Length: 433
Ligand code: FAD
Ligand code: NDP
Image (cartoon, rainbow, N blue to C red; front, side):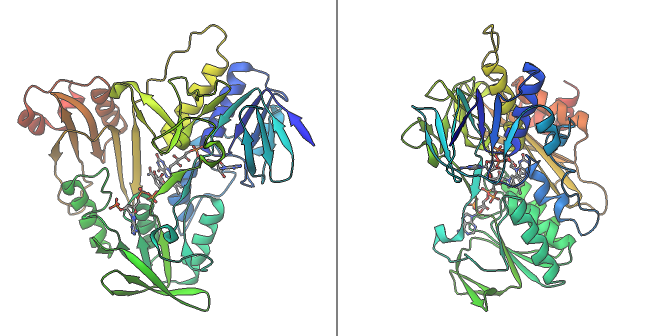
């Protein structure tokens, strides 16, 4: 049993949705040429919604409202859109092996799908506590968050313990966004993580202090420099979380966000890997010319960082690398150059909202008022300066125009002749440049 396509996208997440739209826009007719294979049951959707609006106690969006590409204020691609454009959407189907030499994929239903060009968009998976030695499998009130099924479970579990106690394991993106959602659902939250402060890898201690104070004012308790060693489980449900120093944290539910790993397994030994992902060039093309990789799974050269290879697990990167790969694949004239990407991350927490551009390397120069205010919307940020130039910028509470200004400052690598003066000018350095 088998089918053959010119183009196959493996994975049906954010990158797949943006790639599909780009195919249609650039080639006009993709009828029966393009196939998307996904082990999810639904057409590609904007994954960031799962830790934000989806968890709201009231007015939470549900599919089809957040299919791609609404996150970029673009067309909403429902299942019908794919069939109207002749794109074959193979849902609820896992690819269990790939043969790069033969250009074939074997699915869980026993079908062999062959391609001329493959776009790998398999994203990443949530790390499990088991990988750190603590068992959490098959426990009804322990939640991870990667896909729609996980989000549905989280909503159910939150509903089953009103005003209860939640332990959030991890102080990264999932931990911070889910803690905010839990509080909004009137659940008492204790956050546990191994670092000295939350968002260890991107926030400076000063920036983290602002968010931790804000969360504390909302009732969140932080347990830092701590690790979970085990869980007390009774009748299939967790009742407490045990920490390395023997602290026992009673829990009606647990949310775990301890990092992600790129889904590269199908291609290990067949393609060159780097930084935990599939190594690609500036056209998103892998070490085998018929394979492209995009989104979380791709490790690609960032021109702005002197061609340094990065793997970025963020939605803007998934959207842009997907579009770039399709542009390169359909480029008949050789006019599509290498991707020139400005790394961009963001998060929304309670009524707060931050954006970050570039690299958090070099000296951090803070600006604005970092003390949580008395009702006034906070606005503060930081620039990262390396070798006399701005390489990164963070802004909380910025307007669209202000965020665009800091992005432009990073993109142009604005020169900083006087670092203390940069701190004094703060946001104006970017907006009045
Ligand atoms: P994914 O969107 O993960 O899609 C991968 C797809 O491949 C999935 O459908 C998966 O099921 C499928 N797949 C994998 N293996 C197989 C296989 N063998 N066979 C068939 N199908 C397979 N980033 C931000 O910048 N801002 C945010 O606010 C933000 N919020 C987030 C919230 C949550 C809850 C999560 C989990 C992530 C968030 N991210 C955010 C990160 C962002 O969503 C990812 O960077 C983005 O989804 C990556 O897109 P992708 O297409 O590479 O991978
Ligand atoms: P992160 O890598 O952001 O954070 C992982 C967190 O877990 C860190 O605080 C880390 O601490 C902590 N940790 C590591 N090991 C342990 C342990 N044994 N016990 C307790 N804590 C531990 O991953 P997330 O899980 O938060 O996010 C998963 C994926 O989802 C990522 O790809 C992320 O980019 C994406 N995502 C992005 C969002 C956004 O961009 N707004 C929102 C939601 C998800 P330390 O750093 O101190 O080691």
